[in-house]
Length: 603
Image: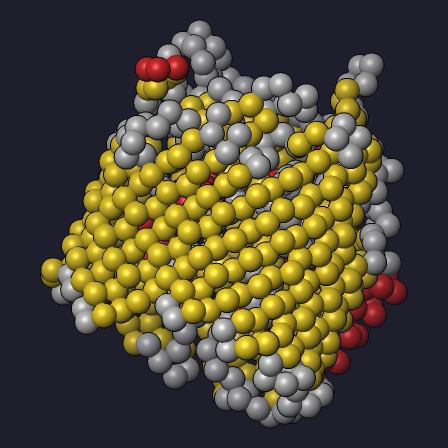
């Protein structure tokens, strides 16, 4: 392992000192995301969409994407399902760094506040060559921005809604030719007490609150060298709903610290981005809110990541991504003591813009990890602009999910002999343009082996590599955008068909709806803005026998914004306009019609 670490740092340092002069522009911390958009299916949710769904990242994703969100009650534990995969087969990426929990291998969407970010990106399909473990079904990208020559700007946003729900954001930024500075602080809280009389359901003990502080800065030494730093502190308290007053109330607390420092060097044919990151996650679970914690843990990750682009010619480049991680953890009440892990990875990508109409790339990756043997990964993709009105792209890749500390070391039951989950997948996208309309069609296929499943033994549960899954489906979207005079209209409707089958039982996986539809439209005229957003979930099984299921449902929300004052915007939103009774996880019903009003000041 020492030889491995030495080799890694030798490669990393050699990329720094072999550079020559060139020119640097704006800092983009996750520079790989824009490159992936050339062939992969990508969605970008900007600050306008985020503020329309300020309550939670769960709301933002369920209204603005094809992802199915499994939420155990409003504001409680929530996880995504990309293309029929599990939550642990989704990568969460913060400014280019994979932040999936080293204990669980996934992220809780309701412990990520969307107000902390200028942009939330969604990449559909595998991406383990670049983003590592968990990037099987897709990845969710949490992006902060640092710009130059923008002067001073500030935003104060405050929203108050039903169930004593409050969401606030204070944001300020300043930049000139040399310096960029950006910070925001946001807070969300809710009593979250509501009733669904038709189902005799009361959301007891559903309160939550969270606060996040984000600070970013960059300094341009000269046209060729640039340093940047981004950090985040997050603290939350979630109470889990109970079904009766006599049931013991529980809660979950999380404290997160993330810090990322980087050096960008552009010179001649070399472009290099060196990142140093420290991630710390603390969590505590209380099976009785009035008593001390019953379980918890602390996970720490030290990461060095280097991204070197070498331009072979005007049309082609090699991209070498090297990464070293040291992970350590300390568990409480889980039997996990002090596991440690060294890991290094080497990714090599070749990109070629053969002509203005044809682009292709190849990628390969190998990880070297102490705890298990990691598979060799690869990717291949291409895009072809056949006509001005039609283009097509294809993606083929092998991806994986590593066993987590819980999988390996939980006592009793952890299995240190586990192998990583493997996935082979392919997709082919088609894009048609006619006047103001754009139609996209993406069929895909995915085969997953060595799925890690926790099985009940004679005296305890233990994980094993047992199941195989075939997933296939079709994603379509039709968008329309037009401006005429002072009128501007943007609309999009998406449909996805998802089949995700356990090859042993020949049945659909739990919590994977066959059909899903999203609809969004925005209209602007002068000082008036109106938006409507809706999603439909089809029949969804809640067990492995296909006996119990959630009925299909349609949820519609709408709102308007008044911007008749120069620096002030007032908004009103009505959620679940039709008073739909629905649940995304069995027995946990979501709110019926509710309201929110907000005000935003721009400086």
